[in-house]
Image (cartoon, rainbow, N blue to C red; front, top):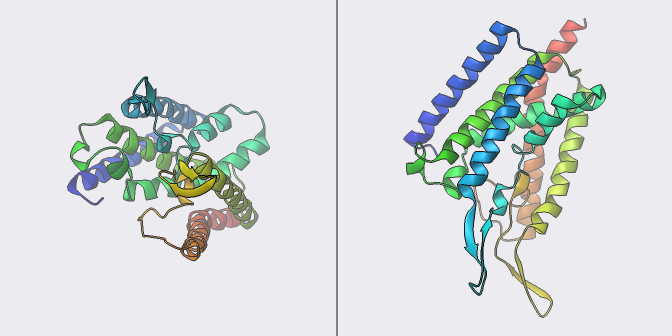
Length: 257
């Protein structure tokens, strides 16, 4: 994080975002066309990710070897769940469902992708900093998250959502539901060790939605530490969502007089 390679990628990402927003405005693209472009990037991104990180792993006795995709690469993170959202909102005929998904996508895609670019976990989980321009995962990561930021800005510009305080609280409620479900998902995909039916250790667990561990890896050794972290996380999510919503709520109020 914050290496010269990271800063170069940030400059590239900002350039890509600005160029696409200018292209969108110049050609007056509607949101569906933007979603078409986003769908193509999502498909390419997932293909690159899967075939870059999948590996051949032997069984414990070494008798068989099979391909394996590490669980932390499952599309269940805040940014990767935008993929099914993108396809659903693009093809649904239900206007209410479309608006609901868009109001959730806007802050989660925008703020989530910004956080991901500022703190690129890819350099600690998938590749080294020295591979920042030689490994396909780097291109997948930075271009995909740049697309999400551009998409979030396009959703804000689309006028397809009635931005209001009520919409904000509805979005927060959906975030809380998804975050609570992540507690189940993180445990489901964990690798616990039991001795005589008693849990003695957990060798691996994913961290979808960062609900189990903070992105800075600050040690948490007591349940009270985790509770405090959850409180901080909830406040941060509410604050960042409000920051992204406020200009649109204010603009909508002025528009409606």
